[in-house]
Image 1 (cartoon, rainbow, N blue to C red):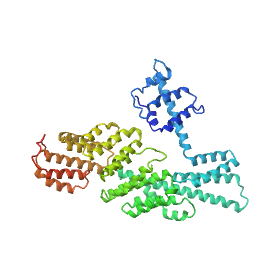
Image 2 (tube, rainbow, N blue to C red; image 1 turned 180 degrees about the vertical axis):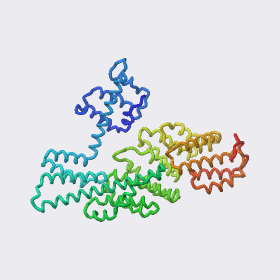
Image 3 (cartoon, rainbow, N blue to C red; image 1 turned 45 degrees about the horizontal axis):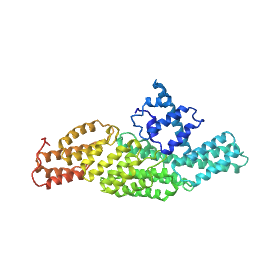
Image 4 (cartoon, helix red, strand yellow; image 1 turned 180 degrees about the horizontal axis):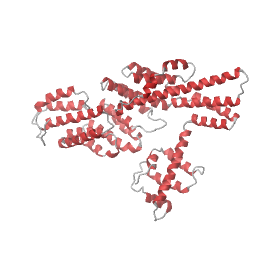
Length: 506
């Protein structure tokens, strides 16, 4: 196979998209080239992975032109033209996927062409649709555009001859401004949330948080009090204000439950996209709360409940992504393992690994099975699944290294474990994106695992009690329960110690 930008794009297509794009290509309004239709039909045979060795430029050229004199420029040109059409298809599909935005555009065109009757007819239909469909904060902006179109229409078509005539336009301007205010505040709060999550995840707290400065100078409570009885969608702002307070006061559980209860209260009025967003926010909030309070299992039940809703109600889907995100899948996997709910782990693998983005699906299937079989103490099978992971294209390399080290220890591959630890240190040193806190966690794990291996293999079991006491005082240590279990096994072990295969000092 060969690499081209069109393949990963096609790999995201659903079966419905494949058929619809085929129809799109056959429409003479969009495409008059029959060769592009044939090119698409040849390429799509390799869906969804596009990894077959038979997928070459030469093969495509021969299928299209039945010519032995291969011309690379011809293939590159045809692929480029096809890629442009794919992107045009995505624009049109995205536009059709947002009915209110589509109708607003139509109203604007009718207004420019001075089609009064058609404008009023479409306006009535659009307002009726907007009143019965669930809302999200993106649609708030579309409602702002709708009100602005109405105002522009009345400015052009209503003559102001009495004061009575101006009042409807003033009310319309107020309504327009309220929608814009709700949208602006909801958007700036979302950016505040993203800034906080990224600061934590990528260790960027040293940067000035401009968004916090902006929000700190806005009296959002006063604004909400002003509009809460003047707009039927003001509850959207109420929800986002609760979200803001939740992340501003992570140590206050009452703020979180106020936010969660508002989501539940208005869930029948919120779109699936909006519910997807807020569930992901609640998950992030609980994870951050765990870190803040230092109790790893304090919020496990709450997280398990949220994850169950996300998986079973498809809240991981939104208008941008229909696949289960790998980060979310990993977080659910680890929480279920931590809670020792292996039945849920098996269900996650069997029912939901297939919903991951196709390019990462096979790796994540092997990844989750490796952890599952490790918990079942089938270490050889766990290692087999690790060996199936293509590490060049895998983002969870630290998770894999940690699990590999645990397997090596369980199987008695101590020299191999020490070799991995040596390369692991260099990997941590060179990683620029991992926060210092996370680096410390990984360093602690390999540091104390190395000491444990040396104690075990050098027959220095008299040191094990002191080692256990030392471990109990280490705060930032992943896999603490597993390491402590291994220490207890050494303390309680009877009979001769295994002869060392090497010697090293602690």
